[in-house]
Length: 200
Image (cartoon, helix red, strand yellow):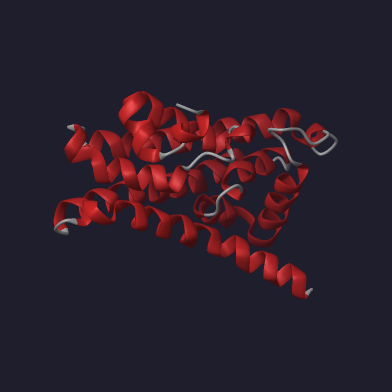
């Protein structure tokens, strides 16, 4: 099985279980090389499959919240320590400066609220805590917004998948379309941002 196939949320969960699930949520939240991981769809799919896999939904959702918050905190300290040097770093397979600049622009526009809002925007959510750390944002302020964002994203999407899977008959037949819809919705803010920049 190829690496890309393991990025399929259902395959990842069934293969690596909770450890794999929590590791991906942590990595996408704060490690700069985790920007390509399927956070939104993974959270929803994990909640959806929880009854089938025999996983306690509260363990799953609270664990997701903790990993999301911890990941962002690691990203913050990483940014605080080496943030300025990242802007001088050359592009590589796992790092593209354009992602960092996009997150910086988002952070400047929305201030502390960006920590919450960025949770629901792919790529931006990985780099925003790094930008916050590089900009030496007050950690207490950062942590407050981090907890709010991590709870809404990590817990909210997981519980959404669980409740839809539990209360809508035969929704499992539509799992793939629903996941694709979530991915599309996640990218809408990015598309709007690109359009606005093109207009400028």
